[in-house]
Image (tube, rainbow over all chains, first blue to last red; front, top):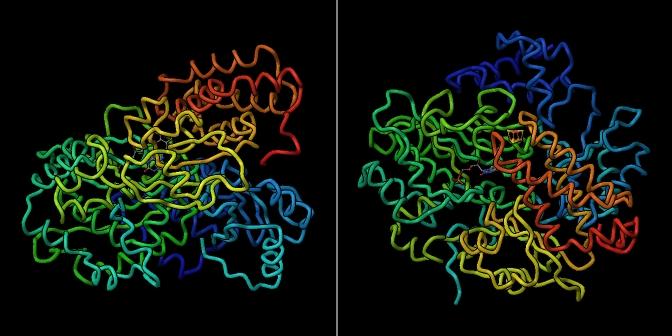
Length: 163
Length: 428
Ligand SMILES: Cc1cc2nc3c(=O)[nH]c(=O)nc-3n(C[C@H](O)[C@H](O)[C@H](O)COP(=O)(O)O)c2cc1C
Ligand code: SF4
């Protein structure tokens, strides 16, 4: 399930830490990027890799907003809905996205392409409202720029970051 | 009088990219050899104490004093962990510091590690800082390449490794013991204190946790002296501070200023005032955990003591400005939603309290408030303070109390009128 290349990277990563369990969250990021989400098989793989129990790994993964235990879209759009972004139009952006994609926040388009997620403050308040698509910040976003971003995303012309 | 920028000296130079060559060309990495060759660890701790540097992460604890708590005779490894979790709503200065001037932080981190006897340090970045973490990784490779990291740094016999570690989205991992749990590969649930991290922190070893901005000040203190640093700003709040100004201002952004600056100067002179001819209604001066202030507080200076005396706090330096179209009940709903989402759930007062605050504020905002709700809110807030493992619970209660203190009538109007008077015409 996990490529040899990823496995090699993880073997190196684990060496950074005096206790190898410390590598758990970075490993979950990496495995999630490879598998698409933290499936039961992915959790079991990570647990075996670090000699932890799957329940233990699951309990950690469920604590963090960026780790997904259910299938998500190929692309992930985070929209900040905290105070400054809300003051400057976050809810407008959210309604716009929901209308354009025909799904609600927290859902994935039926073609599996895009998931929407509300996020807390993304440390972008000076350039609010802010969103992240596949780990990349887009700031001072308007409904117009959102449409352009969605268009690029559909055409595969939006460069994401391996998160 | 123009203030000499220190932490953001170069980041405003056109095309400055913060690579190691540029940082060095402008005088970077001069403090490091000075510290390693001319100063003993104990001298460094003494210098930082005398400088008056206080933590920029939220609590304002004196940095040198914290370093001094690390036991000198312990046989255990010692750790320095840089807190780059930056999740306090309204705060966006650490992100700028790592993305635009990563070597200033790294130089500060190396010197600080030397001071406390640390051989392995971590920079814990919030999960969303994908790009920031990449910038830091590259900068660390550059620093290794010049012999500023690794074995026998600059021939001093001092060894240090530094790694970037990314979290995965949880505000509570900014709380220092939640951060350490997370760095150990666990749920980010804060630990009981004592023992404090200085005695039993990462891997149960003596550990210092410092904020990005705190550590970024260290090279300047070493190079220019404790007295120089102490002379900047008010005596008890020495040195420059980055204020992240956002919301209803003409020019939102990070402003590096001495803490003698008043709210009025910060909002109106530096950030350009309130757009569209609107009036100021409310301002949160130190991240969303800080109690709100109003027009009557505009002449309060932004130092730790003055803000506390005004009933708020310096916190993280995140200044959120709101104009007169803003509904304070809605602000309460948004802020309480945040703390409810981020409570780690270990303590009943916090887990239940944050849930109920959000529920009651939501029903008031949506026209379903009850006459007794305001007393219910205040009673809940009271029960949430001073009783929990960490202060997230207090941080959730204090702002709500302050909204009720300064804007009680607005809450009453919502309840009496069974609707939000700002609906359809305000911000949001
Ligand atoms: C709920 C909560 C969240 C916090 N978030 C952060 C944060 O994101 N960044 C930070 O530097 N400190 C944060 N702190 C403060 C840390 O616990 C700690 O005091 C700080 O990192 C110490 O560094 P300093 O002394 O250099 O400020 C938070 C505290 C609490 C209670
Ligand atoms: S106060 Fe809240 S966030 Fe802090 S430890 Fe208790 S439940 Fe967790």
